[in-house]
Image (tube, helix red, strand yellow):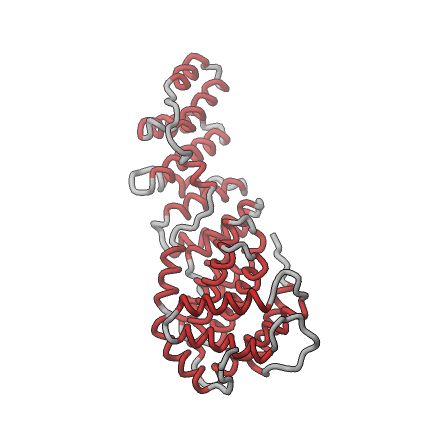
Length: 371
């Protein structure tokens, strides 16, 4: 799984160049409003944000961007528009602290959702790229671990949205960057491991999952996923140790159920039929409604030429009720537990930085008179 980094590296150079060296003259542009109007209007967007009026800032950003760019704009025109917005940010940064980028990043993070909901994929992609690049710049320029963690959460949040939209490969680079800024980011570790697992890349998946288990020995889901990936790498002893730790009460039921199933498979593959049968019998006794446990036990009995016992187990299977929340179905979903808590923490860091943004905007050369 290798996402192309070429386009993002181009934008990274643009962000770094403008924020460090300033805006240079560009060629012709397809922007419908004049460059100075873009600068003034974006200054007004950030001023509204700094005043605490997030909703008005979002509306002003929508009004600006739906008029300035659309899906027909070429890459050079989009670069020109990006540079105009970055000019406003750069001038504010020259007069203030790097932390003032936090509200700006969150504005564009939330604008990404707004554009998706309003079926504006071009604008959604643009604002996501801008927010991600600014988050990376923020992490690289700040020595504050909390700020670096914020940037990691932002990149993880975008990656999760992309995984939910099945843009799996594109999410990988964001998750890798997120882990560079905060190696302890559990959501990123499990999301990246799951992406590797879905592509059959079990070795990198096991590295990330082993890190999660090392961080927290009671991370039952990470331990289960680690054992399954190790088994797919033809390992035996390590997954047995992990799975046996998950059999006793404590982990979620879906984790325990799959631990019984996977451990029985390992024993069966090793020719230890009695151990496999004992594991499945215990699993069936603890989870009477577990359909897959019974199907697996019946299949093994059929293989052992014990058809009557297999038929008795199959006859005991009760029909499923309600939506499919089987353990295997839960496992196959993206492991995004905890991302909403991270998003809440991201938003919690905004308010205390609004004053920094306001001070930077007041001291910048851009007047933001708007038109």
